[in-house]
Image 1 (cartoon, one colour):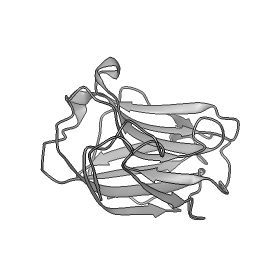
Image 2: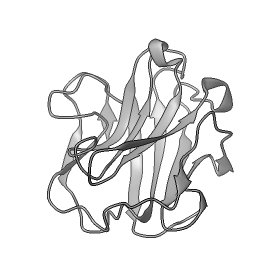
Image 3: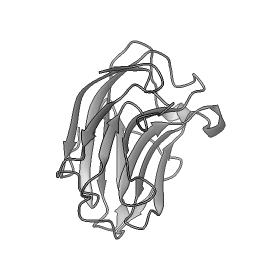
Length: 171
């Protein structure tokens, strides 16, 4: 999937295997620009993120210091942020990087883990469990490569081998 411009994305009806209590998203990314390009880039967003249970995987722009986020919201729309400083990951232009995000809100301790090429990132901010997350989210859409139909935060690169698991999978 090549996503380089505003309004480009892939949209799916939210599959039943997205559980906000625990799960994994795993994909390959070949960005056109590095993490210091100053632009916000969205890799995955559920249409109900921030209003009900949802997920958002994104690189922030200059205002957010180009940090990588793995954010979740609960059934009430309360957002929980895992943040990785731009110095803790590397998006080299035109090189493939495997990004894996797994979460488990059912147990105490760090709930969200992010890996780049199989190596766990160091965190600026983490989310701890347990948290009362929706067991499953029904309805809604998943956007891969942008935040919505009219989104202006394209991934700016190639996304491949995108997988979603209903369990914690480590790379």
